Picture 1 (cartoon, chains in turn orange, yellow):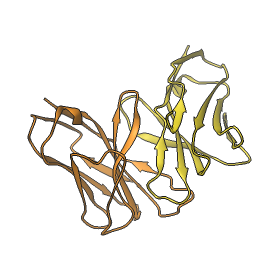
Picture 2 (cartoon, rainbow over the protein chains, first blue to last red):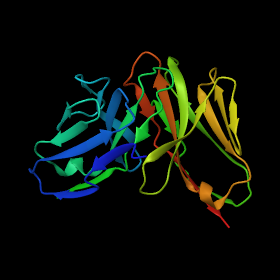
Picture 3 (tube, each protein chain N blue to C red):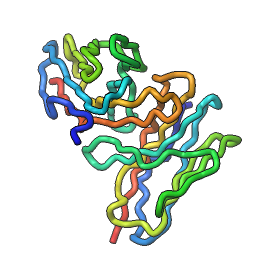
Picture 4 (cartoon, chains in turn red, green):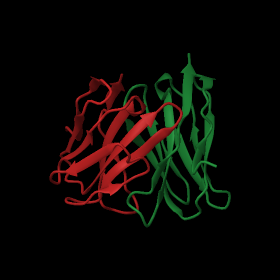
Length: 114
Length: 111
């Protein structure tokens, strides 16, 4: 019953460093998402992928890139980390059903950029 | 105006009490509505979908008022384990990406 698995769980970076957050799901879902959650602001969509081979920008894509490696995996890359990217990052997946679109989340990655 | 607005709380109520909170949304094209629960330092998890006719799941009742553009969540006979943040989620039918999360209402149940 793995569901959505994110790695790493915690990360501390220095300004300017790069890193990739990994996400994998085993529910055969078509759609995958990356969100960030900051205090008092709710979850904000960074990028999403409606299906294997496609990616689109969400509400806050600047400073991030994504790769939908295959149906299972969707990675988020920070090329040059900034303190403003300190946040909790959640990956999620859902079926393509446009009406229900229930999302299943990973446990999150807590990122601090110093 | 935020697309989805919630009272951040915290709502602090005694065990056994009934508590209700609302969520308002600004886009009348919104089609799907959900309540998610998020425990401290954990990921959000679906609590219940909200149907046009209203729906109930045990002690939880969700309602939708399209005319006034809000959804509500009622928790009866609250338990200590209900302490969490409740996120209102609104989705537009036509877009896989247009899913808006409210910033959440914090609920604390005291013994």
